[in-house]
Amino acid sequence: MSGTDDKSRNGFFDSLRARTVSTDVSGTVPRGLKVATAYAWRFLVLAAAIAVIIWIVIQLRLLIIPLLAAILITALVWPLFTLLLRRLPRWLSLILTLLLTIAVIGGLLWVAIWQITRDAASVRDRTVAGIGQFRDYLIDGPLHLTGREIDDGVRQAFGLVQEQAQLLWSGALAIGSTLGHVATGILLTLFILICVLADGGGIWRWVVRLFPKRARAAVDGAGRAGWRTVITYARTQLLVATIDAIGIGVGAALLGVPLAAPIGVLVFLGAFIPFVGAVLTGALAVFLALVYNGPWIALWMLVIVLGVQQIEGHILQPLLMGAAVKVHPLAVVLAVAGGAMIAGIAGAVFAVPMAAFVNVVWLYLSRRGWERPVDPGPDDLIWSTVPRNRRMTA
Image (cartoon, rainbow, N blue to C red):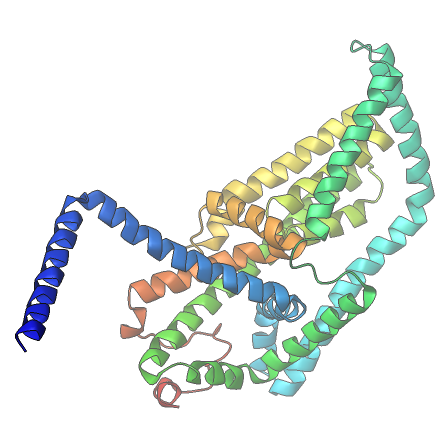
């Protein structure tokens, strides 16, 4: 028995010495390093969680992109839907909203396609002639370039454009590489849009019930705040896109630039891709003016494009966005760039509304906004017909 007691006693002292050594070693580590490592492993866990979420989204891209597109389209048509809903039954308001939306989009595309088909041959001939004149100017002008240097520069420029186009079109979340994928995405988007407009309240209540009861008030309030932000973003982008399209399209028509209507349509659609869309559509307008009307008209077209974009960036966006969407322009640029790198064109389109939504939800949760509830406003899609006390206890 004494041998067993000695062994137990020795084991106790060994463990005590080990703890003392461990404590001494821990005491030698600087506090700054302890704080840094504590932040580091938490950051690694958070990064791993985000990576898993991105991987899941990539795997479900054929479902995620139509869902996001349907939500964004719902936000765009929501003012019209609520206006009809005040006077008509819900089913009739839904049908009229869909028909009017399809009519507007179809009409814009028809005007663009009709004018492009009518003027395509003339624009092609003038483009070829304009490129030839510009090439002669580079050779005979003050630059004195050779034909080989010009060909090499054109080849490099086309290679760069192809690389960037591949980056956009073959992003990780591209809708699909076949016509069947695109058609499926369009039909799924339309189906989700109808479901959200018809029974958004039921869908949202089901989502809220997935969370524990203690968290439902916070989830409901954060969802309402985020939805109002998406509505504000959609309204602002719709108005800004309309103003941009009218300004640049009318300017092109007054200057005699061909395809003024298609330019306006492209500017309208491109406005929903912040920064990238404005640059590309503006460059197209200036290019057509250069090859068809000459350098002086192209210069005036450039002045009009830059003027419209400056008015949009410095007056319209800050004034119309107001306090509901507080996303710094730098954050917008980084969000669009990151979205394009991860998800191609789809990422560039959805980056800003998602950033605005996450920003507002984060602020709402961090400030415990559900402890100061407010009555649902006219923009509340999914809870306006359900009393708040019933929502939280459902």
